[in-house]
Image: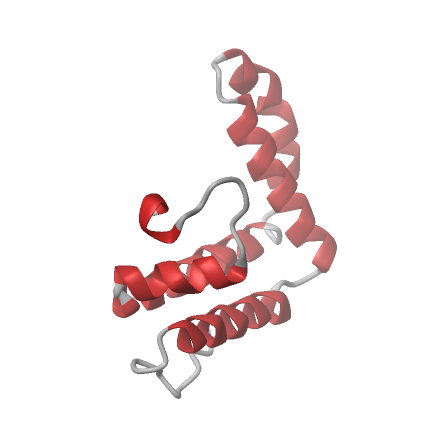
Length: 119
């Protein structure tokens, strides 16, 4: 697809939308957006569990030594960002709405007018 779209160094929003049209997998992309939303809500819930932040700090060194340091850093940064928000529901809802709007703009022949609101 990179060659078909002429991507060299920079990916623009127009190229992403063109890629969506080229892939023609609207339902799969909707499913992906919903999975991202669900995972985000699970991360948000973990911020309310006592000792998770402490556990992330405690395992940092052994996880890094095992070669998983980059993944651990990413998980810890995400956890701390959600913890700092004191609830990520509005943030996740905004991401979901924007991604669906972007997808529906890219592939207007398959729009879903309903907006998924997480439970």
